[in-house]
Each structure stands twice: as C-alpha cells, then as structure tokens.
Image (tube, rainbow, N blue to C red):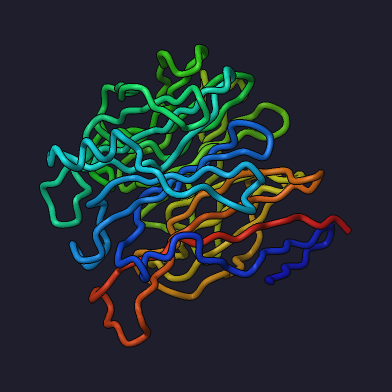
Length: 355
C-alpha cells in the first residue's frame, strides 16, 4: 500500500491487482475502461478484448467485454460481450471502445461508444461520430446504438448532475487539434440521454487532446484539457450554471505533467491521475479546490502506451473509496521499446483518511 501524507489527510492507495489477465489469454486491453454504479453496491465494468498482435498490442482491434458486480467489486460475473461491439467488429468497418458510461436519473445505463475506423494498423483514428447504447435492466440487454453527437470525435468524460447527463467531446476525428474546427464541447441532456444540447468551451483546441470534467460540491463544473505542447500546464475552464456558459481560468500547473487526465472528488479532496509527461509513469495529484495541485506522486514507473485510466466513486458499508482501473504493460522486461505494447487491466483503490 502507498501512503501519501498531507497536512489534513492521508491518501491510501492499495497495491495493484490484476483485473483482466491479458497476458495469460494472449489479448490486450487498450481504450476501454468505463465503469458506472447503477444500484447501491452494483456496478458494471467495461474492458477491451483486443489483438495482442496487431500494432504490437497497442490497438483497438477487437471488441468490448463487461462484467457486473453486486458486492462493490469483491466478486464479478463472467465476462459478456457488448453486442454492438461484436457486430461492428464482424462487419469490419469500425471497432467500438467504451471509454465512459453513466447511470441516468431513471436508472438506465448509457455506454458511450467511440467508433474507431480500421484504416490504420492501430485501428483507431480517424474517429467517426460517437454513439451510445442503453440498458434498462442493469446490463442484461442493450438497445440499438444511436448517435449522440453529429461531430466526429471522442467523448472523454461523462457525469450526471441533478439528473442531467453531461458529456465532454473533443470534436476532432484525430487525436490532436490542428485547426479552428477542433473544439471541446459539452452536451447536456435533461431526459436521460434521449437528446442533447451543445455548449462549446472556450478552451483552444489547437495542440490539445484528452480531457476531463467534474462537479464540485457546490454545483460548479470544472473542465480540463491536455496541452501536447506544454504537459505541465493543463487548460482549465469552469461553469457556474451546470454547463450552459463557461469561462477560462488560469491553467493548472502540474510539476511532472499529465496526459489523459482523469479526475474525481472524494471526501472534499480533488484527485487527478494519468500518465506523466512524456508518457512516463502513473502520476497522481491532489487538490482542495481543483485549481492548485500538489506535487506529483507516482504509483507506477513504466513508460509508453499504458496507464490509461478511469475511476469510480463507491461506498461500501459507510467507507468511501475510489476504484481506479488502468492499463499496464504486461510484457517481460527484455522487450524493446515499441516491440510490444500488450497491457493487462489493473485495479487499485484510493481512500482519504482525515487526521
């Protein structure tokens, strides 16, 4: 267990556990890490089952599996294949990744589907318009896929606030923004995802990629974006009216950088995690306001295409914790850089202990 001491609290991060042993089953697990709690102690956990051969295991060439737990993650069901992802894979036009999912106010589950074209060996870019599939019975069955945005791009985050479903999309068919049409937008639904209205963020999209949103305890939304040209300064915008209007604020300084930022708020502490600068290490930062962040703490020291992550806030018998899911290289130490990017899917838990 890793303990990180601060003045008013201690961070406790459990030792890593292998959740999906892709090395043993000769698969890989990039792109898909969505999780959502749909009833108390019950959540659905998505992961990719991708080729370990194509693009040295660093691809989205495969389909999506999911498992269900009814005891806060102590045990899981056998894996099931998300039907839309299987059908898409067999059709051979695009593959599906589920990077984010959410439980709506009516209890239905929305799984947001990134559509990766098969034109390149990595089977990823250029992206098509994002879609979603809905389950109204806790993941037992799924409805037909439907488009949630008319813009090609990638949905980087989603949350529910006061029964509103809010997702963040970077409107760009490629990873890094390069022109004026490449913008971040939030899409807001007040009818459990039946339709969405769009608000564009003031964050500059050129040289940007990845993103995250969270809501603080006072209803303020925070949006963050990765700057490929300055990994130590993360763009930051806020909204005080649940996403209708936004304003840029000072970028967040992160002393060891961040890629693919993931955020959470647990027991009054903001948590930020992702790859460190230059794709080195699994890095964590902490904050009391979502603006000024601690120095980096590392929970993994590998480099390259791993530590893509997500989190889910849970409560088990009165104990709040974050379940953190992430990818980690599972090849042997003799593998040369770029030779193999096969990843396992890992789990850790994070708790806040107040002094």
